[in-house]
Image 1 (cartoon, rainbow, N blue to C red):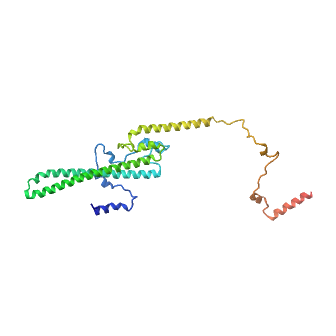
Image 2: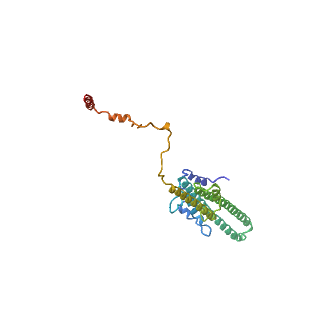
Image 3: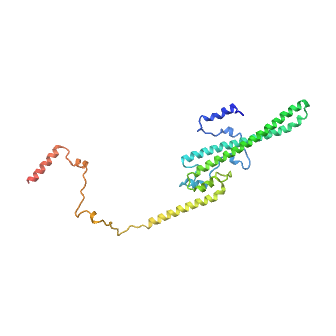
Length: 280
């Protein structure tokens, strides 16, 4: 099946500047709203859990931020959240498509009673068109289900990218990082609540280890006292300077230049004074 040219041209409009904000306009996004239990994750991006934020940011602040502190991680997190918003929009539009297809099928089934009232020469043609429309609606429903499966996998890809962005700079082991990234998504937050207790224990162990290390270093530093009976280390005789030796200060060329007289008159007066001392 060939691609529709108008749809292909519309798809290529975003190729000019891939770095632009890929979010859908608000007026378009508001056309496909959903409500009900378990659909809150489609209207907002999941927030990271507080334990994960405390474990990965390593900040000395009283509050934690909802975005990573690293610039590269911040950019990856932004891309992941934008991808999540687009996929959630696709899921909401697919929900509307399935609802309209189901309603169209319901209308056609009710229209079948009027087809039986047609004459026999027109009834056969009408039933053929009727069955064709029903088959098209069935194919549309199957296509919508396939698109829903693809959108759900894309949503998990966005979740995996956001999780990897938060955990890439953490001090958690590789095994724990892989288990956290592969944990199921429960739509309450970016990370599963089932991992909250284990992550909390890891964070407490890290804080305890840091506090014990700090206490150990402080106790060692406080126990060190200056030695009152300190003596210079013994030096062998062949390395000692002779008795009465005093190192002479080194006069650099700059210092010798400064000691020289500045003009001829000062030089002549110094020579005269030197001769007077010799004669006396």
